[in-house]
Image (cartoon, rainbow, N blue to C red; front, side):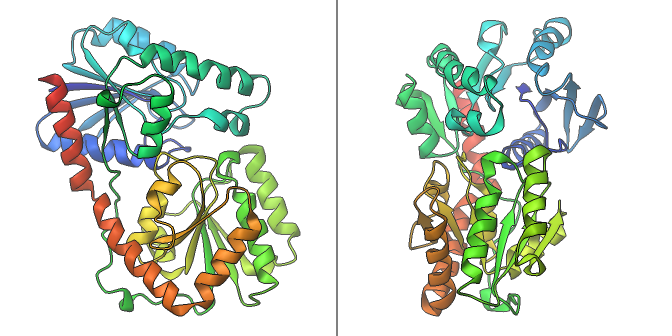
Length: 369
């Protein structure tokens, strides 16, 4: 098939995350199987207009906000009639491809925004986004959808999508699960890890505050933070680190490459994730694959990627004191920690890239007919 994929950012974008990792792995495997894939995405400073990598093409148009309009015009001028199938990925805002493409089209949604609007945008744009989202979801609700978790499926059902039209695939991780956990040498001191972009919806400040509370009980505790510190929130976080009474026990690495990411995922004792909402929580599964369980808030996506008390611990959203209780329990109770890291690693095997792609291509084949 020839597949046109509309999404607002690619893996090279400074704000790329788990969704882009999943997308491009799927596209790479489609290319290996002989399919042609073109992504239309938003541009960014330093990004080239067009490039081909791993067998698929990326065309960057406009920016974060103008890509939707520019993708429409680019399609009309250059790609109308080219594709056999169009994928409209809803990553905050849909391209509404169903209203202008002539080809068969399907929707791909990792997560809905809902409350994220109030974390990522300023008022009144946040309110406009929040009120508009149900409207465009209703417009799309008659369409077939691919998503990555039961949390997102349940969200979609609330907005009029039909269960029979929603298909779930697993998110595939880049890392191979560690076979021998005993071979992994953890840091000498108990170490918490925050991995991912530092922005409002990730609530990285909650992790910092939980660490500071936990330090009063676990004196040798340390914190590693890896990820880009974005915008005003990122600067606020870094100022908070600089002012922290425990700043000497906090290591900020900035963005890390795959080698460093693998190292800190393996050697840290616990991953903390405090997002407002996730599609799945790919970093949780990546950490699990390397023998590092996670403590997370009880929110969409994270309650899918963590089995409470089995592969990690889930605590009430916003309760930093419960994060502290959970991490203290996991670090002090050796039997519990061994159980969590072993079962987390085993659970991560369900999120292989092979399984993710097999599910994805089966859905596309059935839909395209």
